Length: 97
Figure (cartoon, rainbow, N blue to C red):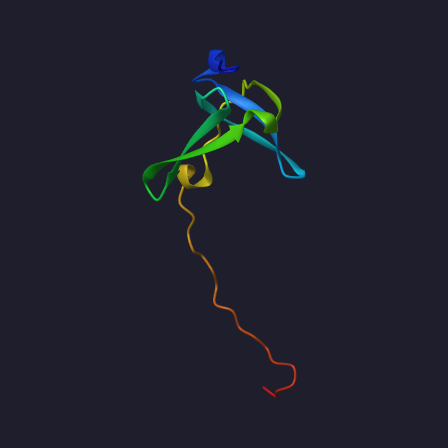
């Protein structure tokens, strides 16, 4: 029986164990197989929408609850970064100018 099927399609926060590390994750609950949950996150990269999905097995879940947090747009969605670098001039200390 799927434990978290009542949260399908909702935004959730989950804390899970990966080896000796405990990690937080926030995403939309895309699926619940009865053995694992599947989180999904959409983002925009170079003008195209990408989807990132990851699986978290039930035994690794430490804490899970519904999130009221609305996803904030990534930097690439707001405005592309411009390469505004000034040319560097290096001064060598051991060489006369």
